[in-house]
Image (cartoon, rainbow, N blue to C red; front, side, top):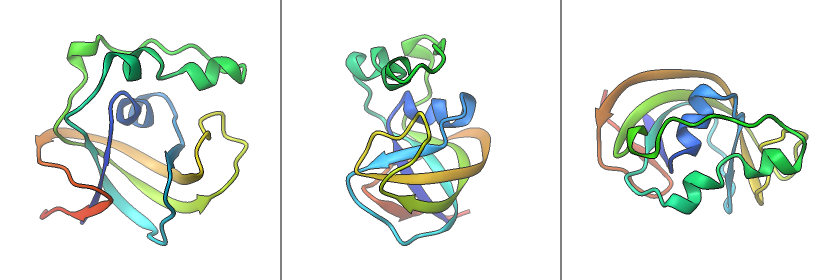
Length: 123
């Protein structure tokens, strides 16, 4: 199955706060289910600014778990990628390309080394 590394806290926001777009600088033709891999790295700036785009667009303020409690370095969920867009009305869209996500589901944490782009994970 394919997987995509997503830095925290954005992986958590996809699984728990309705983040329906994953912003990227590159497009994809891939469509279908994939595993969400929470990257090992996360800076304090990323954590502190995670819902900043929502504040600027009139969206909700989100209470993230404490910095130390966000799972990193493993599989944390799955989602379906249904489209790759260059514009969207989603409050979460702020990239060059947006991977439109649906049918998101958390999974038990499974340590796993990530990679760039979509990568294969054995079941």
